[in-house]
Image (cartoon, rainbow over all chains, first blue to last red):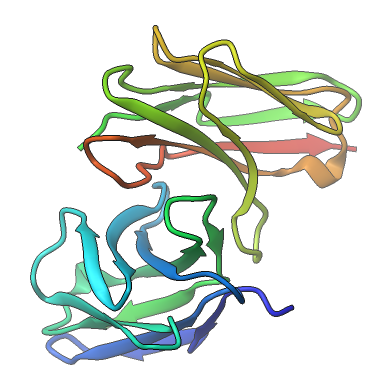
Length: 111
Length: 112
């Protein structure tokens, strides 16, 4: 049984560009949450998707948007990239509000 | 936004030592407290989910306690081994926020 997978592993972009990160949840999970982890900090909640809708959102600007597909996989889109968006982006899947299982993350570097 | 504090920020212990860390969180509107272990170059791994005041959970040499009235949880590691080296994160789930709010973690290094 595959766990949570994320792609790509690493990504380098320049300021102003747009990026799309992808996540496939653990089999049987219907909820996907996205987190941003900056150096020296714990993961910061971006938003959560359930039944293809954004159910909860953290304190992130509208430049951060997402989508969940009928197969429960999810995308995180970030527009107009800033240097401060450089971070590790983690995806976690769960069955509704149960324990979250994390993927390995996507390391985004904005130059 | 919940204020979640973990201490110490980092810790170095010798193999065989027992150690413990603290997680402090707002006690109001508490729903659950999650502990995760995050080894370098791996995904965060769920250790415990605790919900009731006075809860104690154990997994091998690792155990945790929960005090929801005063808003803290302790994680204990008995007889630390080098493979216990990781960052330990706590994350309360509050009924109002309906999301996990992570602390900055305690980075544990166990020296052989």
